[in-house]
Image (cartoon, rainbow, N blue to C red; front, side, top):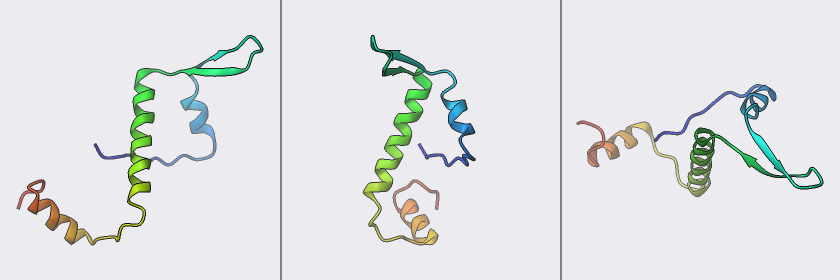
Length: 80
C-alpha cells in the first residue's frame, strides 16, 4: 500500500487527530496509556512502517522515473 503525504499546517491537525483519544491515568492523574480507535492505530502502524522504509533506504542511490518503469515492467507489475 502506498504511503500518503499530508500537508499539516500548524497544530490544528494534531487537535483533530487527538479529539477522540482517551487516556488512562494512574492514581496521581499521570497519563500512563492511551486508548485509540482501531482505525487510528492501524494508520499509525502504517505511518511507522513507511518511516522505517524511508530510514532503511536513506542511503540508496536515486533512480530515474524511466528506470523505475523499466524495473516494474521487468517484474510484471507494470504492463509493457
